[in-house]
Image 1: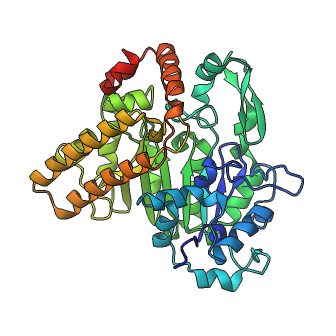
Image 2: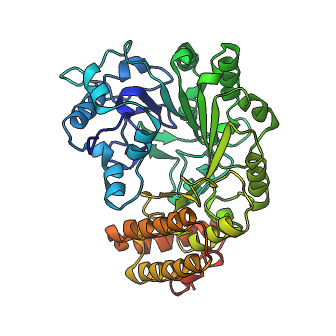
Image 3: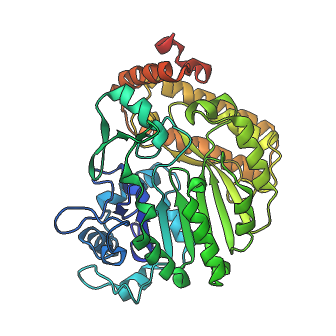
Length: 437
């Protein structure tokens, strides 16, 4: 296996919240956000442009060539950094999921990096359906959730915000609510015509948002797959905040090959309520229990984003999962035995590399103490080793870079947002008392 090769640029297509086509969601932390552009510099947009044409755009061909020649592209920097920290990167994850090798890629790729798209159909999609969302998570912003609009303007002023396609101006709709049409691309018939015409080739569709379970047209898409008799060959994957689980989707899911649910739950109790405001833990827990009881074609995991706000909570969260949750299928296999961890690379206010050295040392001490608990509990070996690996990898990432010059901004920003939302960070991270007391 090549040290840089990934099947993504050959079999996959991704769409940002604003409809911009991008090479991969992991590239969101790079300067160009991984956005695929036309020769005139404008982005390919799923709501108006040919998604087939975008597959051979300059960025796509350049990344393919680099992978075939064993070089890292800038757009792949997140995977590179995570692998160097011992974390399981998206690249490695996709190698396990797809029987698509370096040799397969070489056979269909021209010397300039282009491919014949009709002979190499898309089998995997990553679709971010706008920014319609009922939460306003601390590591997100208005590109991810329309619920952020009011807070964003109060924090930063002005009448909008910047995204990859330029400045997004917010206006008030007939109900007096802030609104922009920039994130309604998924209402485009051009997009759905493309997607539905490719249903016979599909094997996996990943859907996020915003909050994907709030998107009405996605239910129509699921029904279309069923009506065409293709649902049994298709896996559907969600990244969902677990606050909007509707009975009708449970019936639709029964018809698919498999359903994978990444439950964006970053802790228990007041921790997840703080980080994913205004989520309510009792509702999240109720929905997790429903998911845990579904048919065998449904599997789920706790997709925990590690940030400056919950990094001290991880041991408590693990202990709850191991001893109290009672889950039969959620993170209960040997491959994902405890939690499924993602570290926030951005914004700086969420990235744990922003912590000052004394806080990093305290995290390490608390994790070391929790390791003693893991050893003394006589847990199954895969559970103990899985938890140990997570703790070690979080610390390795945290220590890999020093961004503590951003800490003052973290404190200022957090105080301002706490005031707007009537919250207090010390309720969830008392370790920060010397900075917020």
